Image (tube, rainbow over all chains, first blue to last red; front, side, top):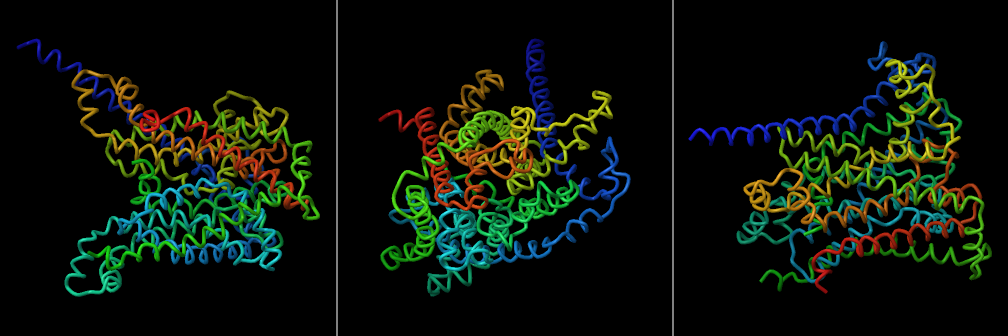
Amino acid sequence: MTARPASARPGMRRRQLGRALTYVAATLLAAFVLAPIYLIAISALTPPEIALTQYPRPLVPTEISFDTIRFFLDAAGVVDAFWRSVYVGIITLVLALLIGAPAGYAIARYAFRGRETYRLLVLSTRAFPVVILAIPLAVTYIRLGINDSIIGVALMHTALALPFAILITSSVFISVPRELEEAAQTLGCHPIQAFLRVSLPLALPGLAAAAIFTWVISWNDVFAASILTLREPTLPARVLTSLTQSRITFQFAAGFIMLIPSIVVIFFIRRYLLGLWGRVVK
Amino acid sequence: MRAGRLGWAPYALLLPSLAYLAIFFAAPMLGAFGLAFQDGDGSWSLASIQRMLNDFNFMRALTTTLLLVILVLPVQLVLAMGMALVINARLKGAGLWLYIFALPLGISELAAGIVWVSIFTQTGWLNSILQTLGIIDRPIIWQSGESQWLLILLVVIAESWRATSIIMIILVAGLQSIPPEYLEAAEVYGATTWQKVRRVILPMLRPTLQVALILRTILAFQVFATVVALAGTGTVVLAQEARRWAVVIDNDNVAAAYAGLILLLSIASTLVFLWLLPTREEERQ
């Protein structure tokens, strides 16, 4: 009788200790992820004259201003590059979803021969070096006269974003119960009608998340863009070519501005994160 | 019944994506090998590959890239495993932890490189913190380039920060597929946390680890903008050389040779991991 609680207690204490240690580990790992984001943010939001002269810098900024960011946006070609990146991203988003969503729907809804092969093919393109695509495409683009053009980069980015668009949309459509669509069909809807009236509205938030993610894939690319656009660069290509000549505050602002969409996008796709790679291994 | 009526439908839905991938993946890949095996005049030869092999930067770029891959992988694997186990422990606010750990997933190489520049630059955050704590009395120049190893270490830290989340996501999904009964059984028999990880989780996670390692290694061979941001021209990697030959020297043939080399290294590393970590089905054969 008395032995039992005595033996139960150390076990429970050990479990509580383990739990506490897990929280400590979680906090340390989260700090490792978040601290650099905080530091680039206050780097970019400190007035340039302070950022360039003050040392050691306090971890809580004494003054917040947008001067550093304004200075970055005023640099030659930066605003143009910014909008170019936005447009390239939008074209990529539209193309990747138009081409990818039907495929995502097919692998979510139909059992057909070759489905697994197709899924593996899509996944393997994700592991494909961008380097090997960009260089021959640059040669082809010059021949076609679409080098240094928004559409040229967007076509390349669509190739990069397409596998993601397919995988995210398929996990979106899996999350929409197919029974609803089948019910609509038994009530006399044509399959296409059933899709448009039932599945599509339910899938819309997920499709929007997929769209934002494909936009960011385009926004983030620097290697392909720096090879395909030389005179009219996208934002990352513009920043890359001036890294060595620019003031350090220019870099801070550039890094911060390029970072913002990346953080926002993860928030929108957080429900689909595991679907991105999750079903790689069965 | 429906399959009979619309048996062609899934193929019709896949067709546009297959066509696009053929034009923008398959064709450029063949094109790259074509370019690599031609000289500047467009006739077939090994001249471009020889030029790459004899180039002053070639060995340095190759060894630095391999070194980065070898150093970054274990660090990321341990970090990602830690994150995945934390997520799997289902702490309060599990969704929030996953969101935080996944944040770098959307961050570009270039932005990540610049983030760490703000930390490692001479009057940056690392020196500021060390100086405030009284550990150093004047700023250390981390990025001076005098030591290759130091530059490589900086890139390893930045890459570990940026690209751990992708492994974490794959591992979390793998962990969730382990039936909870297995862990409960281990617990009933009095297994410690470490024993559970070592004896249950790791063996069951082997196929997942295989995929995560293959993917991350392939991506690591393409490392580019983080290196440019942190090390400038202080060190060189293969992708950087590919870009230099394509853009600065304007020789697409040698650039394509570098691209082909990166692809070959990716394929070789995939085979190595398939051989090192056979999954059960492969073992049975």
